[in-house]
Length: 108
Image 1 (cartoon, rainbow, N blue to C red):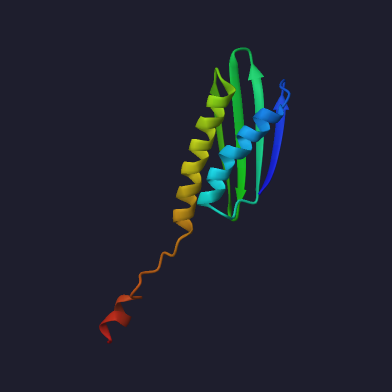
Image 2 (cartoon, helix red, strand yellow):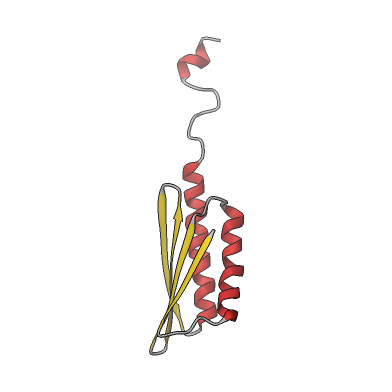
């Protein structure tokens, strides 16, 4: 998983980088095929905003959160992305019935 962090009106400190990395390991535990993640952190007056885009095979997942505290905004963002990844993973599952088509079940 490639992680790109960028800050808009904000310097990315090593503590913020480690916190984001630790939170995104939970997402990679649920779904191994995350290609890359682009995270943008910004400050607008009193609002701390975090946006992220996950590139997974067949789809791009995007989420954005804002809060007064940057760390809680990151927490909410990873929760949103985690739900999206789990939903994407369920859609990728096998949609075929275990017994096959009805005509194949009746012939045996």
